[in-house]
Amino acid sequence: AVVVALPASAASTILAKTDKVLSDSLSSIKYSSPIVVNLIYDQNAFSKQLIGSGFLVPRKERGIVRACTFSSNKFKRKVDDDQVVLRASLDTSMDPCPQTQSDDQVQKAVAADLKKYLSTRNDPLFSIVTRHKKAIPQFAPGHQDLLDGIERRQERFSNLALIGNAYGGMGVADCVARAKQECQRIAANLTSQ
Image 1 (cartoon, rainbow, N blue to C red):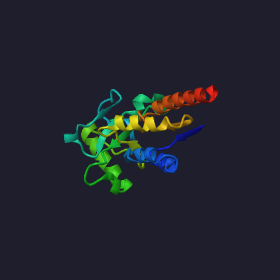
Image 2: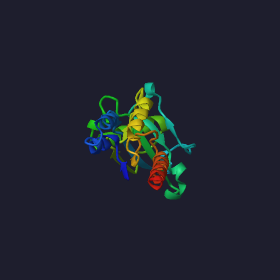
Image 3: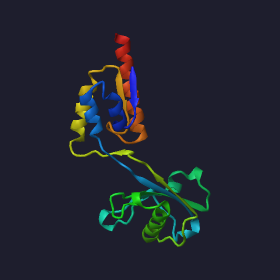
Image 4: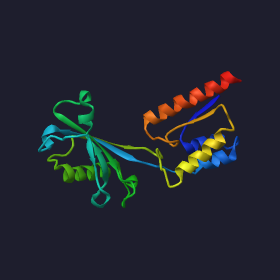
């Protein structure tokens, strides 16, 4: 049995000599390169307590921040009581693109957006920029048809499993569920031979 737990582009390269049609289908899945900024603020930076788990910013009102998670509300055990931890997801399609900006420029732009959206009074105590190169598959129109075609090609190899965020779910739980499903399918194939 072979389990390929890689981004579709890497799986495409590995399978190129095995099945060109499958390889070409995998290589057609495009990925975006998201940027995430984690910030720590002193509790006093906010005029009121942050309620909920975060917010999304409508495109027409958007600066660099596309969404913000109130991490300290979601993961209370991991945060000092006098601190607020935020996680900002950035819009990498804007001009100038954050991908071409330095970490310092990105951090300043994010802090400015958060000041606008949350009325923060102080700069963050700490922030770190994380750039994920080609990490999120883009489910373009026709993606399900593409996945159906990949699955039909994959069926030619009963003991091949493709695992990853390009195959129907981007979250870790989706990937784990697919891995279990694929391993059960392969185990059934191997025991029936």
